[in-house]
Image (tube, rainbow, N blue to C red):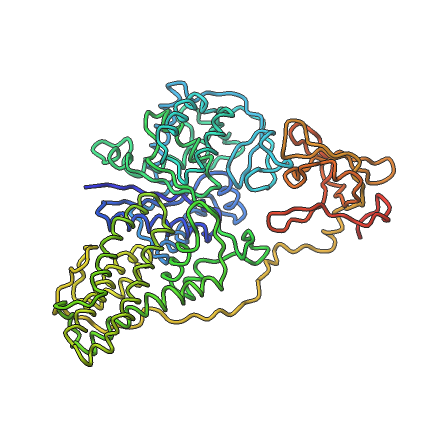
Length: 620
C-alpha cells in the first residue's frame, strides 16, 4: 500500500483561530483526501503548540495558569477543524506527557553528543514570532518578520550547533529538488545557508519564563518553544517507539507551513533532524498569506475575516471551495466578499449544481428514477468519455506537483464539458423522438456527475455526501462507464442556493482607539533632510541627517532604501519627524527619531510639507 503522511504546523493557542489556520487545515485535509482518491493510505496530523512566552503572557493577562489557558483554547481549534469539515487522524498537543518525555530524550541525546552546549547569548527576542535575532537582523530596530518591538536579551543559555549541519543540509536540498515547494523558495533557503548558520539558542531561564519543557540536563532552564514544537511531526507517528510505523510514514511525509515560518521549517527543523540521524521530510510546502481586499488583515482595521462567521452564513463547502480556488499555493491570496459570492454562484451553483439538477431530475422524471442503459451513441458521446478518461492522469500529475489550482481547473473543465455535452445532445428534445438514445445520453451524463463528484469530494466533502444520497450505489473508480444501468437515482434536493452580496460596514476594534491625550504625547516636528545615504553595509537602510529646528540635527536610520534607490533625491525635502521617541540602535548606528511616510500598496513615499513652513514647528 502506498503511504502519505501530511501535517499542518501546530497552531499557537495564545488566541482564537483565524483565517490562516482554517486555510492551512483545509489545504492539508484536501490533499490528504486526494491522495486517498488515488489509492494512498494517507494520514493527517494537526494540533496545537502550547508552550512559550506568547502563550504564557496570554494566560497571564487572563489571570490563568498556562495549562488552564491552553485547555480553554484547544476546543476553539478542534471546533474550527470540525466546522471546516477537516478530518485529521491525529490532533496533537505539546502538553501531552508522552510528547514531553520524547522532547527531553531528544534533547539529552543531542547534549550527550555535543550538539547542545552552554554559552552566553546576547541578542534580541521577538515574543510574537518566538524567534531570536541579532542586531543585523532587525529592521528599524524591530522584528524583521512582524515589525513589532523586540526584547533585548543577555544571559547564559544553551545552544544547538546548527552550523555543524549546514553543508549536509545544503547537499540534501540540492540533491532533492522537490524538497522545498514552490521551487523558488529553495533559492531563498540556500541563500540563508550560504550566509552561515549561527548556533541556535534553544533555552530560556525558568526565572524569566517557566512555561516550557524542562531541559533534562539542567533544571534551571526550559527549552525554546520551536525546539519543542517541531518534533511533533515525528513524535506523533511513533518516533522512539518500538514496533511503530514511524520510518514508513516519515519517508513519505509532507509538512505544510505558511511563509512566515519558512526559516523554522527549512533551516531549524532539517538541521535538528540531521543531528538526530534522521532525514528531512520528503516535502515542505510553503503557502502564502491571506489579504482582505488587498490589505493585511487587522482587528484594528476591521477587515479581519472570521472563518466561523463565513461558514455560519454560507456553509463549509462554499468556504472551502473559495479558499482552494482563489489562492495559488506559494502566492498570497486576496479574500473579498464579491469574489466569494461570484465563485459560489458561477462555479458551484450555475456550473456544478445546475448539472446535477438537470441530470438527476431528467432521469427521475422520464426514466422512473432508474439509470438508463447506454445502448446507443451520439456523435458527442465518445468525445466525452475520452476526455474524462484522459484527465485521470492529468489530475494525478497535478496532485504530485502540488499544483492544486491547475488540478481544480481540470475538474471544473470536466463540469463545463458535461454541461456543453447536454447542450449539444439536447435530451429534452430526444425524449420526444428517441427515448433509447435519450437514455444513453443521460447515462453518460450521470456517469460524468459521478466522476466529478469523486474529484470534488476532497474539496467540498459535505456537499458530496449530500449528493451521494441520490445514488443507490456509487462506484469509486475514476474510469468512465462504471454505473450499473437499472440502479435507482433519487431526485434529491438542490445542492446550492444563490448568494447575494450585501456590503456591511467595517467594525472598528475600539480597544485600539486612543484619546487626544495619548496623541498629544507624540511630538511630531517639521524638518529638512540635510544628508541622505545608504547605511554602511546595508542596501535596505538609509542614514539621514535631518534638521528639526535651531541647533537640533537628528541622525535617523530608516528602512526606506528600497523605495529610494538614489538617496540623494531626498536632500532638501521638508518633512515630518517624530522627535520624542526613545533612541534605537539599528545595525550598530544610533537612530534618534522617525521619518513619517505613507505606504499605498507596494509604494512608499516620504510625507513632504510646504517649503515655506519653518523648521522645528510641532504638529498640532
